[in-house]
Length: 279
Image (spheres, rainbow, N blue to C red):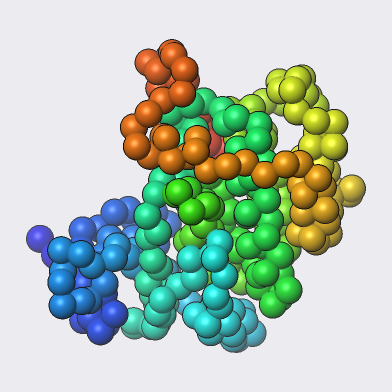
């Protein structure tokens, strides 16, 4: 049975998307799958509609409105910016595109950890996206393995929410957590405080220093800008896209597929538990 709020939301977003099944509901935030409105519904791009809790008043509300307006006109190859936004009975809604491909979270669930050069390539793409945001005095605020999508063309940052108080340094700390999870297979909270190369001896010393700085709890010596992260990552050779394309085509590199899945399930659960502890 569809509740009355869902019916009103369906009408509110009707010009931009056709509302589908509810995907999740946590903390007053409701998430729906949707389709773009086109003349060929079977080929319509996928969308996600997020209905946030009651919007704040005063300066915080004004900051959120400015942020959303800027995101709606943002164009960058590694950013899937919101498509539309609005308000329903004091609650903000946002329509996000769902790019083709898989999230890093799913990639980790299959492999456990990522090849070193692939992880560096993903980090470089995400750092470039963050640099583009930060130059416009914008932040992502929800960066983790579930909001970074991979396909044959590269990496795309998705799922921009209503986060008024996030800072660029918050984004960079989240980038460090993403790096650690891709290279170690666990969130940093679950892996302790040992240096990166304790778990991944093949990692370059420069990468260990970078990730350690990004995860520094007191913000020092955390890089202050995404460009500083790129200065380090750009010293490493780029990765050709074959490993990601092979995975999407159902080809697993090497053996041990079953054990990877089992280990991957632990990675996924560890990531979700880490996010719950931090929320």
